[in-house]
Length: 103
Image (tube, rainbow, N blue to C red; front, side, top):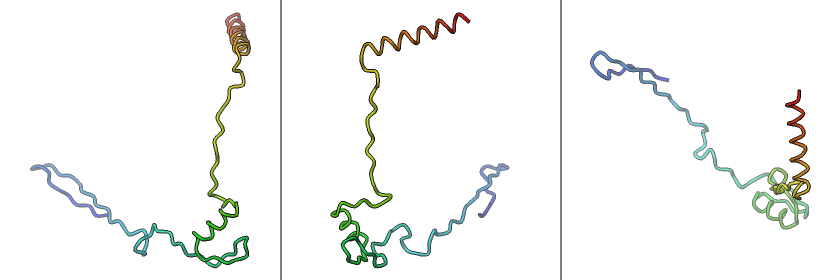
């Protein structure tokens, strides 16, 4: 980090700080993931060196890659949808309020 004084107006100074950022990696494109991998055997007995091919064969065979599966959110259902259950709940709450006020 370098620090230097800058005169904004006569008699008024500000500190200007500049950070020297280093590159995150020595590679030209550090955030690009390669498609190549070490030869890995899939369930079909063949070895694959391409991640894309490996995943496509697994998907075709109905396999799920751990860490990439998608979870489906189940919609919440109310346990007490009926009018009778609602009335019971209202009576219970009223009873609890009356009990609390009587103390």
